[in-house]
Length: 332
Image (cartoon, rainbow, N blue to C red; front, side, top):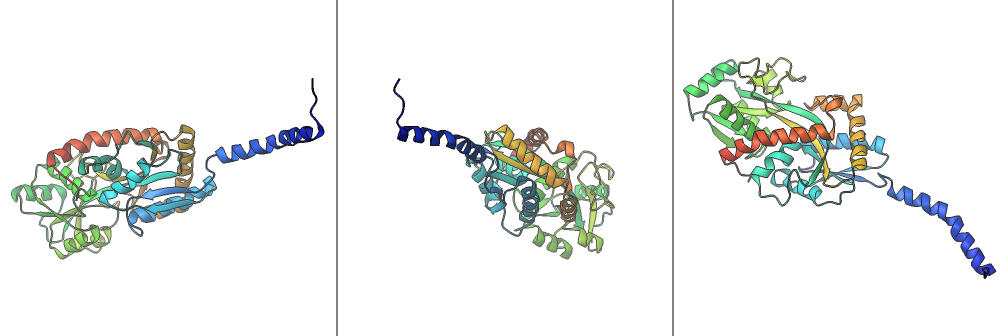
C-alpha cells in the first residue's frame, strides 16, 4: 500500500482535527433558536394587541435567549398578518399572535383568504381570554339584562348597537346576542371601539358589546350601564358585573381569546420549545399583573397547550361559521 507523502499526511491530519469543531458549529446552527424570532401582529403599532404582543415578546426572550421582535402587518381584519405567517418558512422564526378567533376562525367567513385557517397553521399556545360585556346608555329604561331583552323585544328594529366595525368582535358578539335572545336591532359600525364608546356615553347609540376593560371607566363613573359578562365566570377585572347565567340568559357566551400559531409543518420539537417559552412567560408575576391591567385573563397552565388551542379553534368554527354565514356578514 502506498503511504501518503508528508504534505498529504498533514492535510489529512488537519482535516481530522477540524471535524469536532465543524460538528459543534453544525449543532449550534441547527439548534433552535439561534437567531431572532418574529411575532406577527395583524394590527397597527400602539394598539391593544400590539401592546399585548410586546409584553409577551419581552418575557419570552428571557427563556429563549434570542431577541423576540414584534412585526405589525395590519389590514383586512388582521388577515394580512396571518397570511404572512401562513407563507413563512415552517422553522419557528415567524409566528402569529393575537385574537385567535378573529384571525383563525371568523376571517374565514368574512374574507376570501389565500390560505386555510386550519390546514396552514400549527397551534402553539392558548394564552388568555377577554370576556365580552353588554353595555347600554345611561338613559336605557331597563336596569338588568332580562329587562333589557324585554325592552328590545317590545321595540324591534328601534335600538342601535354600536360596533367597532363590520366583522369585529363587538359585531359578531352582537349577532350572537340577537340570535340567542330573539331580538331585532340595527348595527352601527365605527372605526374602532373608542368612538363607539364615546357615542354610547353621549346617548347617540343604545348599547354595545365590549371586550376587556375599555368601558369600565364609564360604568364606574355612572355614565353608562353594564348588564352582564358573556362568560361562565365573572371577570376578575369587573367582579361586580353578573354573568349572563346569573342575569337570566344562560349559555350566551362570547369572548376574545388570544393565541399563538406557527406555520404548518413546523417541527414538533420547535413548537414544544415555543410553547415552553410562552408558559414560562405567563408564569411571570409581572407579566400577569400587566395582562390583568389590560383586561386579559390568563388561562390555567393545563390549558396553555397546542392541543387545547386546536380543540378550541374547532369548537369556535362549529359555533361561529354557521351563525355568520346565516347573517351574510362580509368584511370591509
